[in-house]
Length: 429
Image (cartoon, rainbow, N blue to C red; front, top):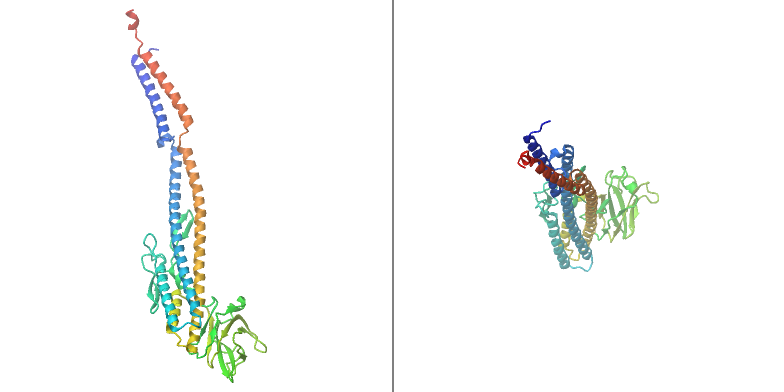
């Protein structure tokens, strides 16, 4: 077979180009650290890597969301903690105001301090996060949630929404609590029922908060949950009746309330139980309370299931009672002490509500930590898979580079020898 000079040159050039190209590709792999330099190098690996990149990007965004969510929850928790500190301060001042030695001037001074705490609490309730959004306004993050005063009352302009963040592939986590839950819907009294004196009372009787002794009985459907204790004083003996406001009948006789003296004799400081005694008609409502002081004829106290009211209203009621003073009047002193007792119970319920909110926030923070750990593990798996698909094996690549250099040098030397062959080299000799 005859091989022309052109064929020799073309074949040699083609070999040199191919060897140079292989060497250049290996050099590029080593310099970039990537084994796949273009999709055409490995279409399957490129497609798989692209899919993993997209999933990894979503996981990375969720990690950012978790970071922002953690910051938001931490800030909200700090504000709730500040609100709790303010309520603790108010509680201490209420207890201080219950000291019988306090003058009206002292009471007004305490009221002034509580007003300051009220303003501080309003500031907390209207606090903003790092993005300028109101923390406790629900979905209406651009609307100031609370406005008002002790005299005019406080209104809520937000909604009941909870802002959420996508913190996992299938998890949206609440990162806020609406102000309606945090500040506006506090249970009253002891959380089960509320004791309240009649505004027209003239005696010195003061009620405690009472307690539920049997939860099943108190929460029974047959329990109307609204009662009134009425007092009478005849010949220095104080008696009382317990009236069911739902039926209008006396619990102690089973009939319409009769004339004084009433069925039971009042002993100051003893518990008044909503359960039958002696020959009374059988009933047990699972509740009791105590009354101290001396009721006057016609004085009464109501007992009703706990409702909800804002913590601002609770503080406002206490301030108004303190500023009204007593002027040393026994009935006025009793009204103040009843107001302080009710305020103390309502503040306790508000603190309990804040603790509940904080516990929810703590649970969310713990969940975020767990999701962060899981997200980090998943991200490591993605990085490992991408490395297997894309990253170069340096040991193999360096060995291949050395081999390709040898091949190229051999090709260059052989081409040089072959291209130098000529019949004229021999004819002239």
